[in-house]
Length: 242
Image: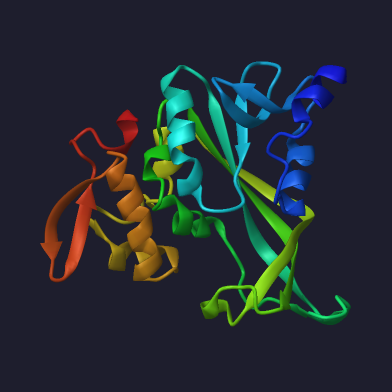
């Protein structure tokens, strides 16, 4: 326990929402090192088998350079990203900090919500040495309108984000894992319109999936169908060869 305590002391623990710390504790296994230095970079968890685990509750683009640099050096890096399937919203009085309201957020995250962030780091898709793990969770978000938040949030400031429960885990590592977002029931070429209709998520969300898979080289852009870009496998070998 002493080496773990020494590595954690004073390193990367500032401005950390409870959610981030709780997820690290949830993921930690005996023998893991928390907040350890690897190649001069602070890593959330270093597994006993050498795997590096980075928990990212914010923008995936913020850790893109770090993750890709470590993977390029031969490390196996697991990026853990939580998505709130359900979220309770709490509001505090800005003067007294007393709880004044609680309600259920109408927004419900799903596995496709991953691509809202992945468009900032499409290089993670099927990258050698990079594993993406999505944790579907129940969470609590506490806010207060004290005027210190951004104008587009009407001055709201997020006080904390907390984990209630981990509901499920989905791991993406191989090309086949990622290509599973393209149902075999629809023939190529795929457009955001056809994919969105098949998945029941709409063209705007499907466009992000196709963009990320294409940026990673798993799909190739073909001729447009009207105003829609279309995509297919980059060779005739298709899905089965991956």
